[in-house]
Every structure is written in structure tokens, then in C-alpha cells.
Length: 136
Image (tube, rainbow, N blue to C red; front, side):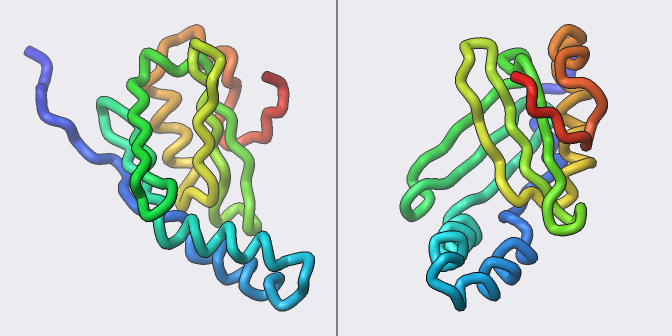
């Protein structure tokens, strides 16, 4: 009998290094939007990866929630950031929409975990974990 309980693999906010780096860039006019974006993510975005779904809570004052079950995922792409300490993960769904997760700590482990949970066809389209994949 399959377990009905939901087990959390990862739960947390975007990596603090993203905020620190963009704070330094924020000292310039050009870097100000990057700083504001990273501060907003750090304050109001939360990621939760379980054995049943990927959840992203965000938006203004954390009022938006996106829940994606693994069978809806058609492709997973990840890009390292911050000298590989964190990264961005993009989940392309079977309906063509995308869910972007920016500055995910331990993004390689999270990407590997998601790849384990999706179906074989989506895993083949995604390719190896942790590599930059730009083709959609």
C-alpha cells in the first residue's frame, strides 16, 4: 500500500547569496532593480518540494501559491548561479506554461529529486541534471 503522507524533501527561501550579491550591485542605478527583485524574493517567496508536488508561494506579501504535481511536468531545466552555490530551476508543464524558481539553494539536489519523480519521457527531454539547458 502506498503512503498517503506527504514527505518534505526541501523547504526554504531563495538563497541569501542572491540578496547579498544584488545588494552590492544595488549601489548603482543599473543594479537597483536587481536588488529590489532579490529583496522581494527573499521576503515573500518560499519553495516546498515534497514527494507529491512542487509548491511555490510568492507574489505580493506571499499571496500567490502554485502547486505542481509531478505528472504535469514535461521538462526540467536548471542553470547554476552564484558560482554554483544556488541556481534557477524552470519547470515546463505539459500545457506549455512554465514555473520559474529563482535562486534555489542546493538546486542540483532539488533538480535531481524532481527528475526522479517525473515520468521517463519528461526525464529524457530534460537531460542530465544541473546542466544549462536552453532548448525548449
